Image (cartoon, rainbow, N blue to C red; front, side, top):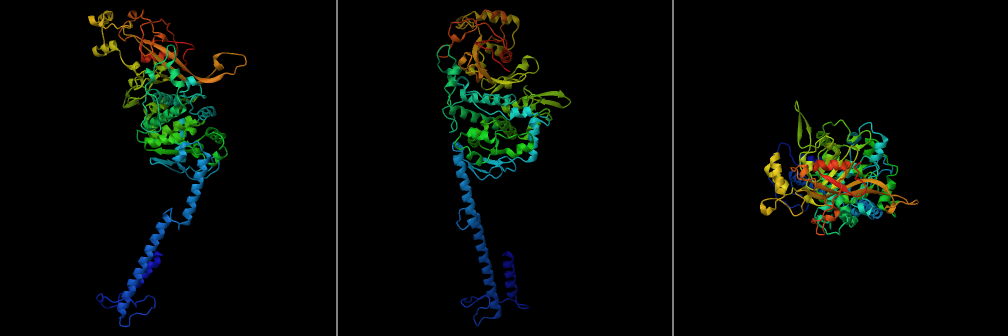
Length: 610
């Protein structure tokens, strides 16, 4: 059409240009009898006038055709114009697929907010295209290139990973315990992903125990600092709290925790959420079952043994607002509960940080993040989830090795911290950033496992009056230490610092240790010949006694440890004491790296960090 219009304009131009004559002035002549293409013209008009009129009408006709073409193009682009029949048909098909998805995944709240268009490809993952998602602003979806998927796989597992390690990381979901006493805890069934689960667990406890109700609709009715709740004597405060948690409270705490970690990795600018590329018809077959059952059936034959396998089944959503990330994570909870959940969250954290940034963080980027031969999560993975940087060390700042070489540690304060048995063995030194986090929650590392230690009271990290004196006056010589010990026996009215509890500056508080590894215990707590054991994680309450740092041991030897019955209903300390025999376990060595010279006691089995 454009060529035709140009030809007509050229013809009109040639006709309107008389040879060897100057153009006549423009005349105002009536056009009733003027014509185009052989129609009669006014008998008194000269040939030049007729040519000029013909040129004008040709140009007007060309302009009309351009306007008509523009209107047709606009109509074709507008999806709702009835004349665009092909677009109308495409919209109708899209609406049908949306309806099928909403019916098949009827229990997913995300269907109200996210519209899923048609997904093409077979159910075995060969030639599958990623779903196209249109939803709330702040979410866009992409697919990984084959090269990126290969880089990601090698970064996590290396090129000599065993099938056993892949099985460990491909069979661990992010699920809460069904046991009432440990219902706040994430259960671990496979070795390996414990570093990922423990980090998420630490943030979940933060939201369950200390965070006030959120201002958005995703997290509601989450209790605030529960350490001040009144409970009867001899009753476990943690058990009382966790048995009252609803599934909604736990799910909201999990969603908020995952979102915070991913935005921490994404420098508070973005969160990339990796999930599975599952087509809608896979759910239709299991529409009468639960979402978890439907997803488990789809993943039954899924195997991820290379970057190519990962690229086929992975989809990635980029969220640039916290609200959109919360909505997306809430919608994807069934996926994260599946056997691929822990691996998908690790991938999400790495992509949120950026693969190049992750390699830049590391001291030795040639090594895989999952350590050989047992498939444990490296310190780099744990540090990434706790601090947002995949550094390999736990000290503060950088360490100068000389010759312009540095190794990197933690460079910022953290919400939840980290303690390790390796410090008690003098293999490393945890810095103050990880040792003294904002909230009294720590991931605890051993040689082969990660667990979580936490307190219900934020005051466990505060200094008492005697410790404040030490902080204000600095290090003390032995004569001054002895003088301070004398002051312990004097009442405040006489210039001393004697307190009514008789603890002489000793701090006594409770800590709780959670180990997500499921352990077989007799059903109901008693053993019988025909009884089937149940699987449950382990939680242990420890009574911790910490002397003032500057006080010699001989001045504290006769001070008893406050027993469980020494906590009154208002959360205060009673004046009655019972001597508990100090106990020891590897966890106590970890606790002493945070509270030197502390002694611990507990009831029942010793807390296990392996």
